[in-house]
Image (cartoon, rainbow, N blue to C red; front, side, top):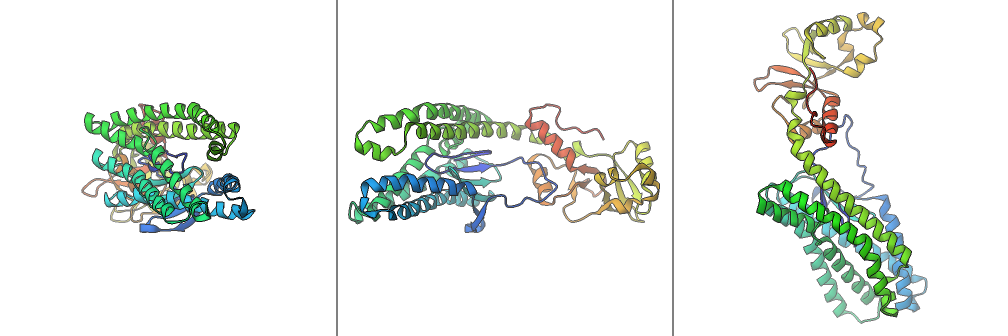
Length: 420
């Protein structure tokens, strides 16, 4: 399931999340994903701390069911239940790997896979270019869950009923069927919502139209889950003892689970819609529009003199140049602010400058996602903006880009231009 802010499934899958427009942070991203478990296909897989909570819940609930089905296990039933929880999330990982492999085949970068409270998330950093690829990318996850359900069904047929392997295989078969069915519901952020988005995109020719339709259906699904899940489990509880075995949760737990799922779906649908609207505004994030006018100064120039020249020229940035006039460093705005005014005549600009490194020269024509990707690749506080021929256009401050990005997220039409 999917998208920019995203998706969880009650069964346990969370889908893929596209994050097209994160502001370029000054600091490098940490893992922030929990415990690193491996790198299949070169993509890191993390287990979030919240996974241990849901694993404990599954162990407790499934253990109670095993006590009714296989009472001879005694306390060993919780060890069997823990194995079931781990095997179930291994199935979720296979679901996410399906999204990941499809994304990599489409040459879409995948930042990471994370297993968490209500499933998994494949963080895909770019949008697909065609509705057909979008449909395939969304469909492969539920397809793999259905394949796994079929494999476990064959396993059930091959073992003796009423045994530990038989119960485990049956539980995994049902769980993967539920994951596939839930994710095929036609609303964002679920995989079915991505598929619906692709269909509407194909018919209308506009990806935004598809996103709006799938997001609002996703919100309707959230309301349906909030109201319908407790009613459904209550009806299941009326089926007699077998129905109680299938349910296994009291009414309060059912209502809490429904509320959590509904909140996740509602939030994911809203995030999908918000990020799609942001994506429409990203072209306004232009390096040329956001660049500050700059004045060249020699390394030994006192800060007070450099600031005087900048004020006369109406500039807001300083570029350190060598004897031939070639830029070598950028004076950091934060460092200037930290120098008291009475000391500025005695401080050379070179003491406050950051040497130009690879990646700190930004073409003036960069805009939108391409600009954000470039800045994320080389985190810094300022960048030298140059024309196609190498001429200096000015200095781009990360803080200006972040402000413009936040303005775009808040739907502020006056987002992009920072006075130079």
